[in-house]
Length: 320
Length: 261
View 1 (tube, rainbow over the protein chains, first blue to last red):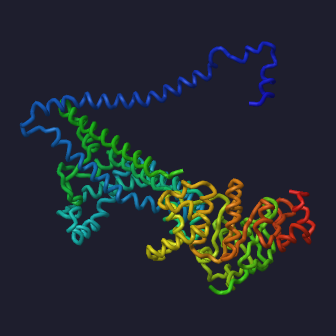
View 2: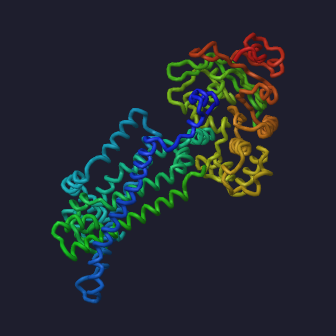
């Protein structure tokens, strides 16, 4: 602040007016509001965590009491669900990540400007489609369309454990659920990757081009290394959505509870979220507590994945 | 290597979409010498520089009409791939731009490894050492070749970029105000380097600094514009001594003596 400013603001004789006693009302209101909003996040998270922990206690206690009797085991109930959840999400990511990076690169570096903005808009629209709609579309339209593909995979690639087993129509199997999950996480991964790719410093790209790099070489030497942490973050966001996705899985997957790797077989897997959604309406007492326990496991799982993602991003981020 | 040939530029017009940015450049650039381009901001000297390796095409809507003949070949011929042009005509930018994820070694070899050119380890080590020595950087970095290139000082980074450019053994090196972000000592190091580089390369340098132009160049070209919205013109090219002591054109004289701009 220049001296001229100070002089013009305090023309009055008492110079004490510059040390205002107390803070301005607007400032303190705004400050409390923003602190409050920040605290609310912690409170909500804590409330959810406390709810999940206390409500799942009965199931944990019951499993201790019945330990040894074969008809009730917390671990045996939860682990297949965790397995199904993780497997479905992992396959969904495996399908979605390469496609998303391809689309994002096309939008950011290959498409003519008008096409790229239209395409970006469509991708955002895809993210806004409710999951029930994906569930309907997947269950009624996509599943029959995938049958011939599954047949081929099973016949010719059946030696790979994933495609082994005996697929039977209708193909309400884990593979179908994963394909629909892939479609659902695709927009998130694409949108985030696209933003990161667009932020590649122009000077870096020109450096590569001036060395005689082709467009693909420029992307390989500059854009992808620059966007690596962004891709990881985008994928983890996608994974978060895939892990918790309920409706699509519920409406497509015929549930089961095994550790089978045969993703083409029907009635072998289920996900935590879909399992809770299908059973919570009729559950009570220890059964309800058991479902809440699986919810707690899912909560911790997504928490861990987020932590890992942050760690990776921090480690491999662009050094400035 | 064949006898060095001049760069022949004939009737070159440069456009940004409909806007004519630079008009009617006719000039011959001597091989194995330093040609400096000076002129006020916005007169099109950087634009012109970029047309010498078709880097202006990176900007949407930019195109050039005319002939630019390098090694007897018109780089605007329809059969010519800009990627190949840029391998013959390297470029150093205003701000040092080493690849941030790469080590010093990988930065120098980045251009060499492009296009899947296979190169043995010993050959690449030798090439890297030659390029770093050529850029007067070897002694400063030889003990930390695997450290990131971004860890160097600004002047060292710019010399790393020069090493990266000469590692692909171009015929021509274009420099777009290479010292504008550097302190005087680093600037001096780059200017010394330019003197050495002209033994092997044809150098065209754009600079805002007239002292620099007079220090480093053999020939100087003066660009000017009549006003905003008007195309830039190459007013005069001559030996640097002549331009700075006895220019033919009144505009050049005014600019040199600081009477406008």
